[in-house]
Amino acid sequence: MTPGVERMGSIDPRLAGARLMLSRVKAVVPVMSAKGGVGKTLVAVLTALHAARMGRRVGLLDLDVTSPSAHIALGVDPRRLQPEERDGVVPPEVAGVRFMTVAFYTWDKPTPLRGHAVDDAIREVLAVTNWGELDLLVVDTPPGLRDEALDTLEYLPGPRVLAVATPSRLARVGVERLLAILEEQGVDRYLVENMATGPGSLEELAERYKARYLGRIRYDPGVEDALGSPEKLLATEMARDTEQIARKLLEQLGL
Amino acid sequence: MTPGVERMGSIDPRLAGARLMLSRVKAVVPVMSAKGGVGKTLVAVLTALHAARMGRRVGLLDLDVTSPSAHIALGVDPRRLQPEERDGVVPPEVAGVRFMTVAFYTWDKPTPLRGHAVDDAIREVLAVTNWGELDLLVVDTPPGLRDEALDTLEYLPGPRVLAVATPSRLARVGVERLLAILEEQGVDRYLVENMATGPGSLEELAERYKARYLGRIRYDPGVEDALGSPEKLLATEMARDTEQIARKLLEQLGL
Image (tube, rainbow over all chains, first blue to last red; front, side):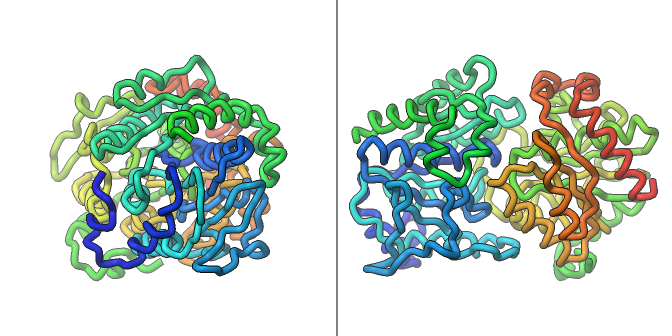
C-alpha cells in the first residue's frame, strides 16, 4: 500500500507527525468490521490484554470516533484518567496495556459527527500520542466501509488488518466487500469469526479473499457482566477463545 | 424541525422532488440506531410486514447505503426483481409491502463509499420513487450518528423516528446521544429495546429524553434461519414481540 502521507497530498503535517510517533512500533493492527455490533471492540481489547499477558509491549488505541467504547470495557473513566504530556501525550497504562482513546477528548458531547470533524479528531489523536517502543499496537477503528475507516488505513504505517465478522447472513455482503477492498489495496489481512453459533462458516470466505483465517470466537452472553474490569474480561469464555487468536496473530506477525 | 429543502439551501431539485413523491404518505417513520448490529433492519422489516397485515397501506424503503440488507431479509434478489417506471419508479410489492431499496442500484459493487456518493444515492432514490398513497412508510436508515443518517432526517417530511437500541452497556452512550440529538432537533421519537435479555432497562432512558418507549423485543437466535422468507420471519418469536410494537406505533401515529 502506498504510504498515506504522500497519498493525502502532504498537506497535513499531523500525518507526518503520526508516522514519527509510530516509528518504534513493530506492528500496527487495525481491527476492522464492515458493520457495527459484531464485537469488534471486545476482540480488540481482549487481543491487546492477551498479548500484554504474553509479555509483549502492547498499545491499544480507540479511534472509533463514532462510538468509542474500549474505555468502558476496560473500566476507564475518561474524566478521571487523563494522559500526561511528555514529548506528546503519553497513554496511561491499563492492565499492562498503554491505552489511548478519542474519548479522552470527546467524552459526553452529544453532538452529531460531521465528516471532517471525525477525520480531524483521528488525525489529531494520531499526531499527539507518544507510544514509545511497542511490539504491537491494536487499533479499534470506526465500523463500516466509510471514509473514516478507510482513511485510518492510510494514516497507519504498514497496517495488518484484523477483520472481525459474524456469520450472520445479513452481514455477509459487507464482510465480502471489506475483504475485497483490503485485497485490492494490497493490505495484509486476517479474519476472525465472532459470535459464532453453528459450525464455522466464514473460513471459505477468508480463503477466497486470501485473508488468513485465525479462528472462531463463540457467542458469550456472560461478557456483558464482565465489562469494566480487565480481570473479569480475561476470565470469560470469550477471552479463552480470543487467547488462541492472539497467539496465532503474534505468530503471524513474528512477534 | 425546519423542512429539509429550505435548510439545504434549495440547491438540489431532487429534494423538492422527494417531498412531492412523499406528499401522499400519512406517516414517515425512519428506523434509526446509534450503532450497527442492533437489529434495526429486522425491526424495520417486521414493523412494515405487521402493519401491512393489519390492513394498512405500507411502504418499506431501505436507505442504509452502507449495508442494505432489507432485501435479504425479505428474500428479494435485486438482480431479478426490479422496480418498473411509471411517473417515477414504482416499488414492487413484497408480502403486501411496497418495497424499495438502494440495493436495486448498488448491488454487488465492492467499492468503498465516500461521503458525497452516499448522500447522492440517498437523494436519488428519494427523488425517483413514486410511493403513491400510503398510510405508513418505514425507512431503514444508515446506522450511527453520521451525516448520512442525520441528513436522512432532513430529507423526509415530518419524520417520526423509531430508535432501536440494545441494553448493552457498550452501546448506551450512543443511544443517549441519538435521543439527545432528536430531542434537540424537536423530532418525534419512539424507542424500542431489541435483543433484550434481562429485565428491561432502557425505559428510564426513554423517559429522560422524552421518547415514547414502545417495548422490548427478546433476543431470538431463530430469526437467522427465517431470513429470506416474509412468512417464516412472521412466524418467529421476534415477530411476536414486534407485533405489539407495531400495534402501539400505529396507535401513536393515529393510523
